[in-house]
Length: 227
Image (cartoon, rainbow, N blue to C red):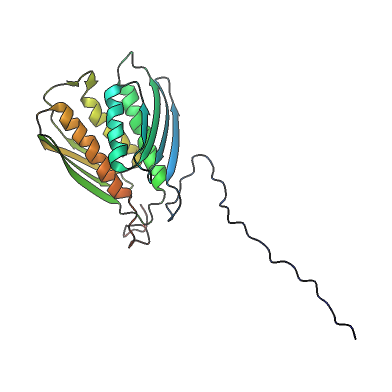
């Protein structure tokens, strides 16, 4: 009597590859998933390409045509340990305002996209940073609501050729587009370069703390369940 044989199907293999993401899609900050964003913005005044990696190592390539501003962007990435690449072409023959503000818009949008649904992050970040005789205090809440408080006084109107008012314009643009609460205060300081540099360094440190993953937080850090 012959034994009956059965055809056994090989187990169906499932792909471990994640689906490709659509351009501009907001990423969820699931553990192990890259938190990156690329933003392109073109207007009649500026053309900007910006790439951000929240989990980088502090590599920054900034080319905006505004030397002092490039130096400040370098501080954000280096002290926040973000990888940041910025290429901007703007109407610098008018002034630096449009370029600086529009880079702020792009950076804010990149932060919002890269941080995703904010599940598992710390949400809040703050840092007090001394720079010679100046002290900068920066506090951040990635609340999903935009608000900026900026209490800083400078001795002059320019740092080299850079208008000190543009520091506030940049930070307001970042906060509005990242939908964050951003509080910046400088209680004392006499050197305008030191004041501005302290602000940008403290901003990088505070943002690093806010986007950092909290090993004890398993959901969105809000009683509402969403941010």
